[in-house]
Image (cartoon, rainbow, N blue to C red; front, side, top):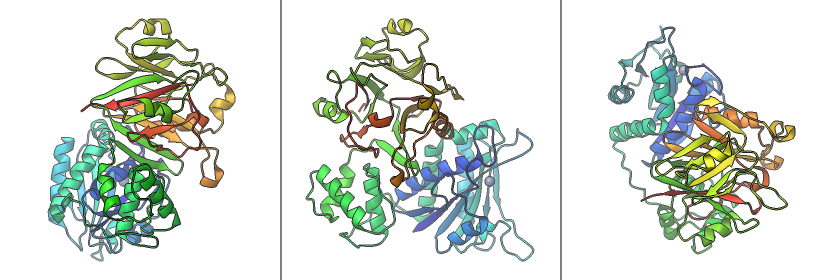
Length: 475
Ligand SMILES: [Zn+2]
């Protein structure tokens, strides 16, 4: 089975109450792709980047040969009270049962009107919507709620994963797809095909940066060998039964994807997660070194706030395992671990927070980017070039369900890594609908390790840092 998902419009198009439709469609399409792939479906996108903007004709032509083409949209009305989901099924290649079921389940999920499955044709009898005039076996255009309505807009923005899961399960049932993995052949240099894509996706999921193109070239071989070395497998660059089996064992509590060609997004489900701030061996220590000496390994580990390069003293408010390390000089906000929850806490007076014994661990950072769902950049005390020039950046975000790490790579024009200004970084957080978002120590200090202690961003070097933030998933 192969599906094509078309995220309608493009970046910054069709302003809704809480998102731009073109942005939201794209972000949802990534989640939907991932969920459908877990059923062994090959999924392609008409937009592989937020800013991609194929014409309507190009989108239609791309659908040739796919089993299913889904064009994702949200609806608009001049009446901001109007809510509901409707699906346009192709008039020439009806797939009414699937459309009805999707429409019904989605409407229940949103708790809004089921506006039903619709058929709209031109005078020549062909589909009215160009999206549905291509040569996929089935095509649908989905209007998922109204972005002009507050409830619909928020519901959609905050539930991409859950909605994608629901979609995938309805579609899987219709096509009788099962979650079990497919039997895989042995792949080697110059192999081509869908199973090569699966291998590449597995490597990507395991944290290695590569292109998923279905072609086993020198780059795929090199990365496979690195993976094999990292995971104690025979390093032969051939993907046989042992390597295939190893992908199931990789500790993958993290979700990650490339937001654009220089920005990696890493997500960890917030439920049951505890944060511990660790101070490196004085004056500084690499994340790998700390990871190795921790007896319980974190699921996600990132570098902390800024520190003095000469003496390794933290410039940010830091509390580690119940002990106040320093009040810092730059932090107006800190990520704090309370007994039962993690929160971004304002700390206009560090003394006040320092006295809060309920906080076990805290990492101050600067500047704030988004606070309580609102863009809120406080540049006080930071120099112009730090704010306004493009640098590699790392920032920590929160939503109700997830802890987010956003890494913007920079200083490598060959790879297309240009870095971001503080403003650009905040905009990424807004597009991801983050509730809170704060900048950590970027530049050469950026480092993110997964539960296997492996680098999952794409930054060179291993600069020792002063503080590190560890997230542990319980159970
Ligand atoms: Zn639309």
